[in-house]
Length: 163
Image 1 (cartoon, rainbow, N blue to C red):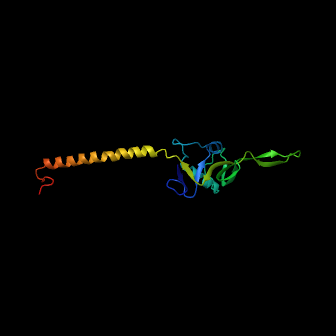
Image 2: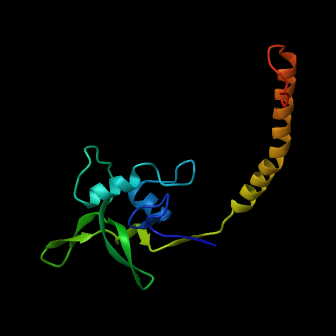
Image 3: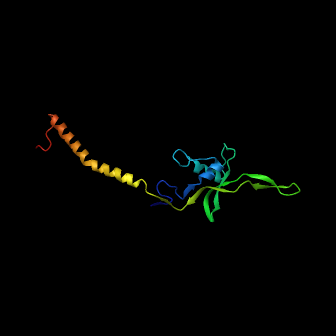
């Protein structure tokens, strides 16, 4: 197993964000890209929206986003959370209505301390490196033979090793 922590090569500097694909699709209409990853710029867009910057082209039906903590399965998770839309609900006989959330907050990207990976590419990498190293003597011998043949064909060049 390989353990990666924030700041490692290829990971975020201060935290590792893990997507909740079901919530991303439900609240933002976002699915995996062709490589199975987050679409480019999504984390930056969520960060801007959480900071309060509104997009010029707002998409209808997309929930708002904030950065904070949410309870999931009895533990507090930090990350980007989707805020449900709000609507009015009747309260009582007098016809009064109140504004309520039309859903519950949903975690979009959750921060974790470390990620663990099975080194699935280690065996193919080792095999390719071994094949490359085993070819070096053959390649070097072919290059040396070609250099000797070239020098022998040129009359203006002295033989290798000759005084």
